[in-house]
Image 1: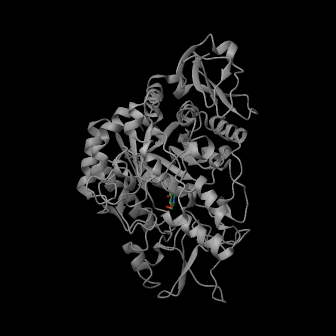
Image 2: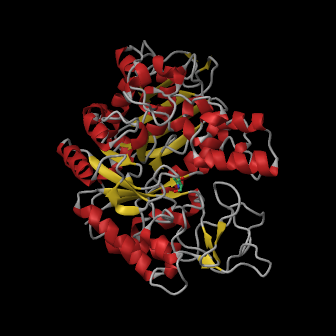
Image 3: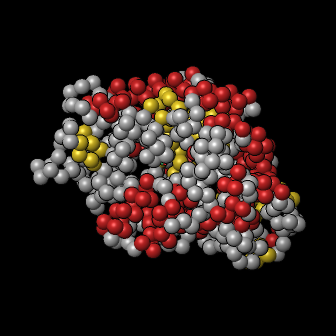
Amino acid sequence: MRSDWWKEAVIYQIYPKSFYDSNDDGIGDLKGIIEKLPYLVDLGVDALWLSPVYLSPQIDNGYDIADYRKIDPIFGDNEDLYALIAAAHDKGLKIIMDFVANHTSDQHLWFQESRKSKDNFFSDFYIWQDAKPDGSPPNNWGSSFGGSAWTFDERRKQYYLHYYAKEQPDLNWENPFVREYIYDMMRFWKAKGVDGWRMDVITSISKDWQFPDNPRSNTTENQQNGPRMHEFIHELNQAVLAPFDMMSVGESPAAKAHDAYTLVDPKREELDMIFTFEHMHIDRKKGDVNGRWVLKKRDLVALKEILSNWQHELKDKGWNALYFENHDRARVISRWGNDTNHRYECATAFATVLHGLQGTPFIYQGEEIGMTNADFEITDYEDIELLGNYDYYVKQQQTISHEDFLQAAHKVSRDNARTPMQWTAEKNAGFTKGVPWFKLNPAYSKINVANDLKSDHSIYRYYQKLIALRHNETILKEGTYELLLPTDEQIFAYLRKDNQKQWRIVANLSENTIENPFAASDQKAQVILSNQKNQLVSDYLQPYEAYIVEA
Ligand code: NOJ
């Protein structure tokens, strides 16, 4: 019987490079995570998901793996990871590792061998195709990091496919040896105590080998959910996840609520949960030639509709993974809220909305103290996606100006989440005594863990309360969900109900003081949690006010 501990859990994501540096080389490391375990235990989370720490040239911050079984020296060594797993387990925390097997680094031995010839054992470990007669790539597929998804290899005289950087060649999952090697790697980590996997772009592992063109060149529209995806994921489930009882959450950029169950319905034996992207696109102008760099005002009605659809569609047929932030997303309060005058209220309001839903909430490092976006200059950024897209759209295609691109980057770029964790107001936010690998967000002198914990407006303490509710209140795990005021453009409110009781979760996700449509009943109700000083429900909702009442 498989355990489902993750249904009651709150999971905390660590981006190791930016979490805490224990040896003053400017880069966060595994020993740094061990040092900070008490902070995480105190927060109350149940499991840690570590972004990749394996050997890697770090072209995409570790999402380009050169050896799946070896820890990259910038993070420590294998012994450090085993020590972290032991220390975490000792404190009741589970460890979830990042599984990046749609692609490897071009430095991986398999690719080094594969590119040598068309007829060695590793030749078919990757996706190689001949050039078209005119020498151009086999089709018009795009890389998420800008330009074509194909790069010509001079030695093998063929193109290889890469959905991301050219240094991240896609593995060929049609090859049974690839799959077996990957399952074996997973068993290796299971033997070291790893409890589960976050599966990077798992819905890309199967390709359409007819290689049909996309409707528009150098876009990625039809590169997901390939013909053998379910078969491969089921096989992986049967080979490793089920027999070793490992939890899985797969990244699924193209999933829609109505068919998401095909990946997470327990009867299908594929994944436990998926990360959807749908709700993260409520501020994006779809189909623009400049991809994700053209934004519109966040659409709260759409956010409510999308999250509600996921609540309904997966009810009794799967389980939601709930998130607003991760290492690929900007800080939610800067992106969709107010990170200046109402920072505390805004951070806690978004948290209340998320943690009140059915599913497993994921907190991204720094979210629990209301970290904000960093408005850097282009030259300050590190992220290959941002720099690649800048090069492609601003310099090569010239379809967007430098200013407009930068403005969008300030809102949504991945680097907003990757600045080092802000622990104190001291130099480098107490993250390192060395030279930090990436610029700190200058806001750290005000926004940091030490200040937050001292404040009577502590976001961290609010999270502690939310997490405790998730642990103690089965209504949050099992209760039904009903959206209230679906067309209201400022309030996100819903009911959760079980046999014993009914809770109303209310958040004013606007900067306005507005009439509280639930005042009459909620003023008589017991307040379970509120982000207001007086803990009372009044006739008006203050900017970003949020509360939960037993209605
Ligand atoms: C999704 C990861 O979350 C992202 O950081 C990475 O760049 C791509 N997949 C490629 O691995």
